[in-house]
Image 1 (cartoon, rainbow, N blue to C red):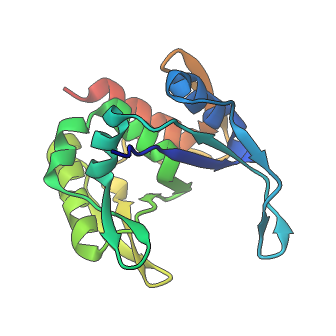
Image 2 (image 1 turned 30 degrees about the horizontal axis):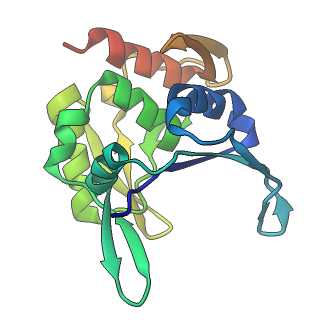
Length: 191
């Protein structure tokens, strides 16, 4: 029987965060993170990858997020279902935001382009049910992204460039002020 693994890839600009991920998962990893000088549209785009080993416990989690389809080759398609609710909590929300979140001064997006509109609406409903977050689904290059409504954000009208750090899981992580303040609010006001 074969088991699945996970691969986490981040730009070198997010080294502090990807190193934190590695330290958190190091007992599941067979080697240190991999550094690559990759290209994106002909422009150097260095990145770091953390790869876990294959374990049966990880296969269970893998099945929660990926559906296997075999049409000549094995393909994994990202999926969302209500089983995700049992794993949704403030800490998982913070990691999701750090992995797939995007801020600008007036809004927060979860990068959900890999999912269908139906799955994005399911995710938005889960965010509302569990955290009281109001969101909409917006098109980005023809793909759906979840936009968290401004009225869900506890802190507004702050400069987006103001640096701040938040201690998460005993590691200092530097992020945009909006993301940190927002996630801090979610962590400490959730009950």
